[in-house]
Length: 206
Image 1 (cartoon, rainbow, N blue to C red):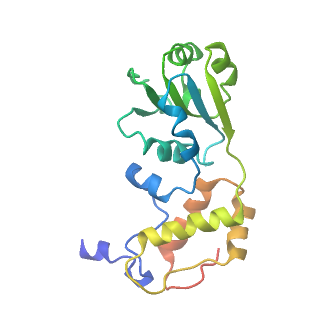
Image 2 (image 1 turned 120 degrees about the horizontal axis):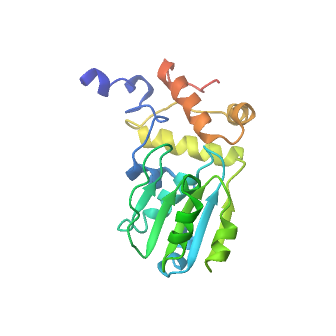
């Protein structure tokens, strides 16, 4: 166990910064702006939809907002698995709603509640039919500045002590975007592999 705890000590890190993180840490690490929706979500009749392909940050945005309402249900619908019971609540956080039958979505959106939605397909017409006010945010694209902040926050989260830690030049961050576009999951997976084999504190090369 001691060897496991010290596996990244040569990098002045406690663990690989780019591995899976727990739900409780996502809001701490997220580079998102969600505060402007908190007041509106405290009242029924509103749907906030995060739309985009896998790896674009839908779940991160949803969980960042959920940290303001930890008592309300968060449900992630898994592919090819039984749909769980969806409790009655004034605010529901529903992730991957494209996996629900449209008839079930209609019943849910007809409730006297508000919703934070993550989806690969646009439900705007369904919100209109059920009388919901809605805001749809299409998550796509990533800038060098934003990716740099994401990487730096991850490394600081894993930091072991004062002193140097691995760093990235902006040219290497641009290279990641050239390789993977805005697929943040793919970028983090590549960085995880790089840090698994990184032997010293240095500017990381991809």
